[in-house]
Image 1 (tube, helix red, strand yellow):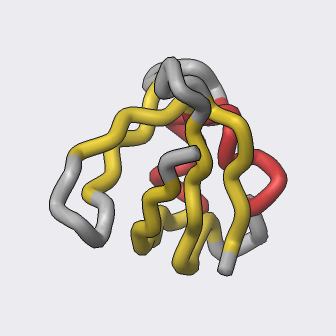
Image 2 (spheres, rainbow, N blue to C red):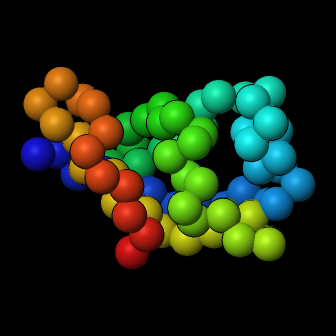
Image 3 (spheres, rainbow, N blue to C red):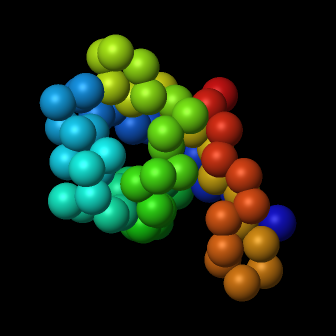
Length: 72
């Protein structure tokens, strides 16, 4: 299964746009240079009072569907 790693830093204020549905996708650049679009709600388990910050690993299936998203 393909795995992609990326760094993400979104302030709590900026994440409110995603949380409220004004923006439905988060676009990130993986460490290998690929641009990946993910559903914003995939990041809800990682939201803190400061927003979302950290290095993540995305696992996709053969159809490029999200299998797992985890913070490293």
